[in-house]
Image (cartoon, rainbow, N blue to C red; front, side, top):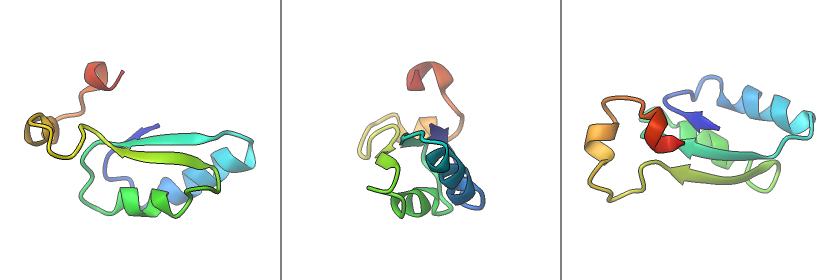
Length: 74
C-alpha cells in the first residue's frame, strides 16, 4: 500500500486488512505526520515492511514530495 500523511487513519486501515488475512507492505511517500511510525507499530503483526519512497538520500525525494508519483511507485 502506498501512503502519504495518513497517520490519522493508517492504524485502523492496517488493522482491518490484517483482520481479513491481508499482509501489508507499505510504501511511505515522504509523509511528515508520523504515518511510517504508526505503520511500524504493526511490523511482525501483519505489516511485512515499511519502506521510504523514494528511498532516503535519493535525489528524487525533494521533488517527489511535491506530488504523488504513481507511475514511479508502480
